[in-house]
Length: 133
Ligand SMILES: [Zn+2]
Image 1 (cartoon, rainbow, N blue to C red):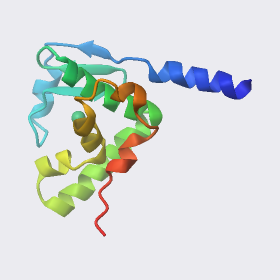
Image 2 (tube, protein in one colour; image 1 turned 120 degrees about the horizontal axis):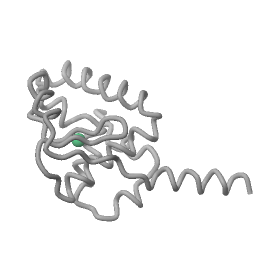
Image 3 (cartoon, rainbow, N blue to C red; image 1 turned 180 degrees about the vertical axis):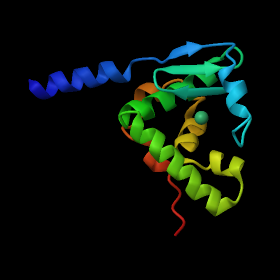
Image 4 (cartoon, protein in one colour; image 1 turned 120 degrees about the vertical axis):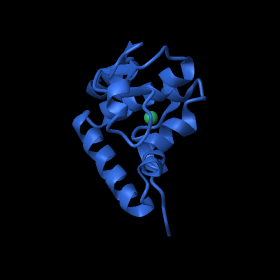
């Protein structure tokens, strides 16, 4: 019974959507200090977009939202930066380092899949860590 209550609570948490903020200056300003031109960014409870968001963008950013929930937000931010730094050393290119980040690889690989947000495995990004051997 206790296990079922936890499970139901978790399903409720997972079904949450971030707060979508469109036509925002936030991605525009962040793009000045970023290796890529940011269209939309998911951080904490919100997603900021420089224009309007289509379904694919909303799904992509909601995948990031779920990644953050599953890592209690702060650990996702830390891991995101660590993966990016490792990739910068590895690829010597900020933009490539961004695209090869396992959090981004998971989001880009699945943002066209309408069922991904409900079928997504717990810590699904782990499957996108590159195995070099
Ligand atoms: Zn992304």
